[in-house]
Amino acid sequence: MESEAKRLALEQLYRDKFRPEEYLCTYYRTLDAEVEFFLRNLHHFFFVSNGGHHDGTFQEHEKQVEVSDDEMNKKKKGRRVLEIGSGPVPISMISASRWSEWIVCSDFLEQNRHNIKQWLLTMTATTTSTAPGRHDDDETWLPFFRYVTELERAESETLLLERVRHSVRAVVPCNVLLTDPLMNDKEAAQNADGNSLYDVIITTLCLEFATLSVDEYSAAVGNVTRLLSPGGFLVVQGALGNSHYWHNNHQFPSVTLSRAVVEAAVKKAGCLLVDWRELARCCPLQDKPADHSAVFYCLARKNQI
Image (cartoon, rainbow, N blue to C red):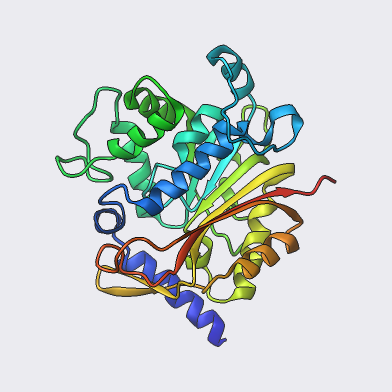
């Protein structure tokens, strides 16, 4: 009963006190080194290593795999990517949209889903002054897109903006504590062929904040992995050593993660660890009011049946 009360209190805290615009102004005001770390690793997975599908297996490449646009477009068809816990942040989709033209975003909060939907609807290839989540003249998402543009050696960030808009097919509710995290919206998230499983699932700074204990975190990883095709890849990015973050004058709790905790959860979910990377905290507390000691990237592959 006590754990259930804490769970309901956490959900209510997010529903009542989480403000997407304020969150973005605090945690995504600039393109900092920690966000670059996340973007760079997603780029490496989807572009440099070709999303784990080069020659049928994941291979570590420090040199880019040269693939023509025509060849890449042919490979994109039929691939499915799901982001769990998108929040009001569209940047995890950038590299994924070069690899797949069927991306589904999901989040627990209606206000975050609304924010992403509005951004997708209003952002155009010629927009240069749209603020993240607010559509005014404040800080824009363009530096984030420009960073990936440079990684991809693409022509311009505006092309990547349009690529994301074309590739995101649905924005749906999710609850990682359910055995079916996409709940009743699974049909909306299906590909054209009716397949509701995904080749790649991304989750960034989500699961440790959606759960209240290590056991609950492990269960959430298992629930998410059920949506992954056998042989598919799970990309988990998050914070290490974090117990909370501050937002809207409220303290939002976090499960304190270590590499051992994450690896154990991934293994229990039926996945094999493929790659692990860490970056020690490099953002001052006044810029990011959270107590994490590092950020991490974990790549795992679901066991074949």
